[in-house]
Length: 301
Image (cartoon, rainbow, N blue to C red; front, side, top):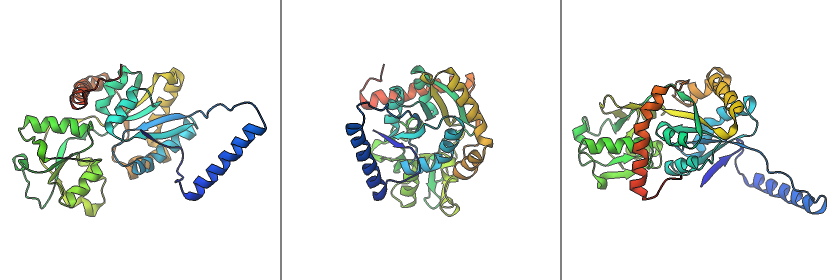
């Protein structure tokens, strides 16, 4: 299942009524006025990995969509999926023209015809977040605690579970599934869980008063690339080249300044290098191994 937004209007009752009325008028005109059928509206789909709620995702990425509509293609619409797993499968099936995707999905998507364009400038540091008053000060203190893990197949799920197993801290009965990082921090604040697999950037995006509740355990040396933007090869080399240039110019635009300074903590864009793609191979292999083990399903050919 995919979620789509074409503009910033919410589906109010008046809007739905007006839409239904316009549809009826259009249908009548097709029946009584002309025997021809209109071509379906062209659209360019930008799929956003579901790291937060749909409303939050679309609100955050509205400046980006507005910029792409004005500078790349007026047919750009935002889409997402109901889970990390579904987003990856949708991408492998070519459901999106452009994706903003977690880096561990990049190798698989490249095999399916997606071309890497840019990545966010900030690397993500894997950590474990706890409440300051929890009494959890070291990794050893996690033993027997309730640990929240974000959505199945997220980066934090894949890397976090592997890290916990490597450190002999993984206990399935103590793992609590989460829909998003925001859900995890809310659950942590309310004492439903004792710790959550996350990144310091998740805390940085909270209001100051909420940030003061949390701290990160000292886990050093574990980081990974953030989100990548990719375009499907079906767009054609000319359009992909134009999109690449437009994205590179986004951080210095008015919409880009708002996106990076007010709405996110991603640190602009930077180029994708061969070394980056090489680093991601092991993450991609881990992702697909976990997906096969947990679902017993083959990936799309």
